[in-house]
Figure 1 (cartoon, protein in one colour):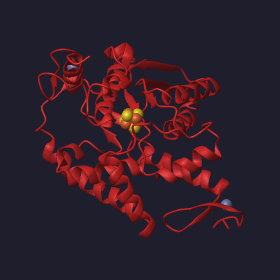
Figure 2 (figure 1 turned 180 degrees about the vertical axis):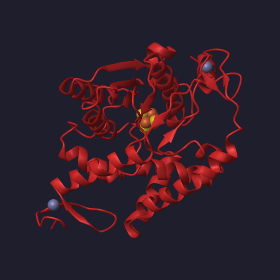
Figure 3 (figure 1 turned 120 degrees about the horizontal axis):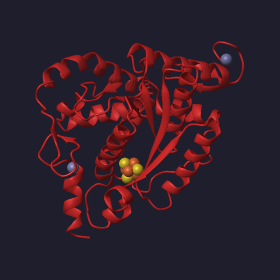
Length: 305
Ligand code: SF4
Ligand SMILES: [Zn+2]
Ligand SMILES: [Zn+2]
């Protein structure tokens, strides 16, 4: 039974609280809005581009951003989808994203790896044994930043949730990539004028389970589809470890992320001058070397294609 109104509970939170549908929806929205307020994720005059995949996280985020911004005349909201070219997967989520944006009257732009880089992810993966998600992640960050700039966005919103962040923190810790962790947090890239659009993560403190239940209750997606490349990666192993710890010790992920947030100012201070930002000699996008990772991948794989 729900802790607050004695009706049928739909979820047990990691704190042990049981909530019914209405109380859970209220709890969820209140927590996301609090994150936005506490970390000042949205400011007056913002032009927000929301990165959507058509999956549960991004549609939940887009719905909530629309709920906030539709009451604000000073803030613009649009959606952007990157089509990696993953057969039998992306077609379905693009359909969901298109339908969603049509219902809520949110402008949607779609950019593809094929048009942008000349190859779909499926074509690129045939030529390399590299981890699909590493390549895909680099290309997606590149495409999102490039087009968010073209759309003159002041913020790029992404649907990262607490589980995603907990995994990234632990992965960076275990691989001794602390400098990369310094770039995590609910808002990143706030040093302006260096070619990076600041990224905001309003679902930062919501667990994957909470987002799944919220999107299910709101009927955002027609069916759950998983990328065929999402198995067998370092992240998947870390996800499984965290899930089993969470099942045994509820609140583990939350504890990890909250401890990290406390340490983040120290990390940001330590690394603030270290990574000098240059412009890629090929594409002009910001990067830390002469040529950005995307151009390097494309050059290396072009030789094999
Ligand atoms: S699971 Fe990996 S390959 Fe699939 S869309 Fe996500 S990052 Fe790309
Ligand atoms: Zn209730
Ligand atoms: Zn480049």
